[in-house]
Image (cartoon, rainbow, N blue to C red):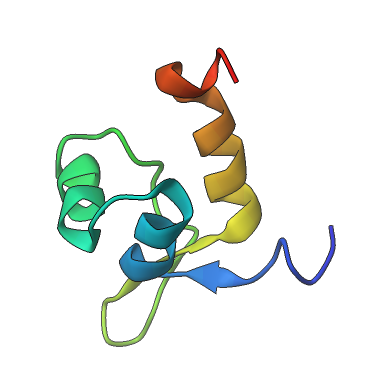
Length: 66
């Protein structure tokens, strides 16, 4: 795994990656669409490895035709 894959992403980075607002990503999490966080910070902030989100993005239905 490259260092780029082990970057930790917040809602904001995920939103930028998939082209939606951070509030949409939070909604995905509340509805069980987003994978469970890889890390939760001491302040309770969820974070995901970039590789986790890239794999999830590749599995999303609207991406299958790409």
